[in-house]
Image (cartoon, rainbow, N blue to C red; front, side):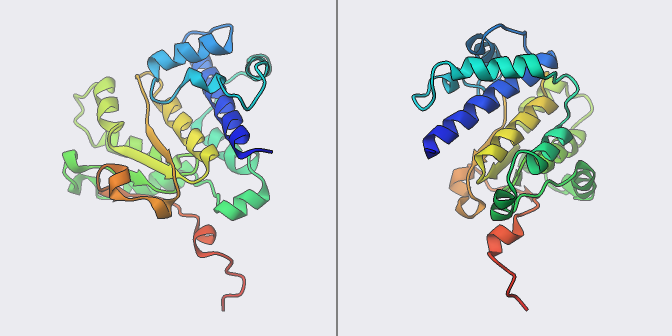
Length: 237
């Protein structure tokens, strides 16, 4: 019933869920306990995976083992895709009330890829390309942006060089902490062969400033929560 308890539980579940996906996809070695698994993932993805998710006073000490066991024994994640995560976010993991309140709508990759392919990315100097989705949801525009910006780089760049460039040039935010965690996981899965992670903030688009972002975005792509931003439009004529 407490907001802090919900936040800590959400963080725990997502951190362990991310680890299980990374394990099954071969990005990290499998382990037999939640703490060792988080520590193993933290060594590769220190900016996004944090073993301190286990150390909350808001839930019993036995809960991490329960969540870890449920994820370990009931599911296999080797074939999971980022599209699956987005569909699950909208259709299974949020209530209709929350979907309406936050304006949650998953944008299919076929749509985001179509939009990104038609943006004149090359008209922006390479060193000035900074893509932002301020209402990123589960991250479909961020993933399309990753592919578009990556394909615009010189073909001689290695995967590691592309990763290091793009992780400082792609950023997202969402007021729903659930969505922010999922967007981060989607980016990790999309580029799991490389180390360290991505900047996805838990922040309302109306509170974003250049100071908070660290730099002015030159590419903004989003499917904003129109209803949530405008309020109840049922009486509009």
